[in-house]
Length: 275
Length: 327
Image (tube, rainbow over all chains, first blue to last red; front, side, top):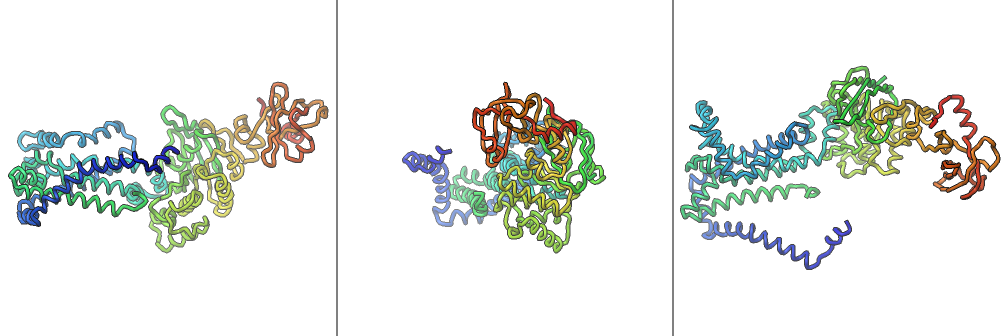
């Protein structure tokens, strides 16, 4: 304790060196590259931005990305909070396996996720796809497939934010609510949800950012059809490969802008004591 | 009887928390479940509240079989050691919680909350968050919250365990006075014998999952059923083959009583108003507590020769009731 207090009070050259290292590292890895995207976007004034905003296919891609991201976030939030409750509050056999399985989407490359989804839901050769196709539901090369892929890759984010908060809050408040006559739903809505609110919000923001930016899995399952299943990240790639660098930078800038805006809004809203 | 517990057993894996426990708790009383940590008393309380389920046995509350009822249907008030305050709700909303769940009219809720906050002396803190209260205030809030729903029984799990000694003593007195006002059947768990002796009308001593003795504080202190109860309820020392309380022993100048044991004073410790004298009698070290005047009258110092005996009035009472803790 005393040692820690000492090193915190000390402002020796070592402390400044470490700070400098961190700042330089973050600058070259994150801040400078992102800044260059913005700088290139506005190299010709508003021309690049206006260019993509007048292109109906890009507008379609942007709105598809936003729709998919919103649907994926809603699904991941509902299931994420549900699974977290299950993991923390209930004894179930194979809990550790389930917990390990939930990290899979983070460790597996998204392109593998995409391929495996095609294997299951593919319209012609998939395991489950032909049955769905007969029922009139096309998953792969269509919006449901993009949503599935996006949900898959962002699956653990809400859970990993909510589980530690649930553990920290503990069960006593919920037990107190139950003994005061609240049923399970009332207890969840009035006691549990307010106490894990910030964990959920953080999970939602991370999921949203991840969903907006998903590329690999979406590329495999979407079919990348212009004006139909091409999402914003696919537009960036397409434009970049076609030497429309201005358009690529501008689209990339918009994607980054939304993600940064989310994070700024949340840290501004968050109450001071939790910071 | 307000609470009837019959043949309740509970295991956690290999650990037997409760072993065939049967207890009747009278209506309107203040009952303490007393015992060492890990003895099963909290588990018993949580089974009464429905927060744990018993492996075997039945629980009746006010004549209703509650064994399979969920906690929200038992109409019990539960107070936790660590308050379990609803952190995101103000003090008033915490107290109002049970009434809001029961969909009482707003005006009635406000009136009842005001009344309860007055009862627990927290009226001026109604709009604060629990984080802005001290531990003692938080526990009083939790008590008001539990009382708000007019429970048929009030259960408190080590309610003062997380508080510092001074606040603990204050709250103890206050709980006793509150109970005299409210008269709700109350059961509280404690490992502090002084707390149980001071506050409770009736004490249930629980050790290693079994009930050792049930009785009033006087009965337990004066006529313990066995050595465990005797040792747990207060200080003990051995004189010959007898287990006695140090304050039931007498010191005499050498040669005063031919029947008394003789020894040498080894150590004298003064703790406030009380003097503790350790006397070596043969191989044994006997502890005797005296008050200051008794001590000064004897003029003792380390190395003095003395005689030790059980005070005649205590010995008389024991031979009459025939309850002697023999080792």
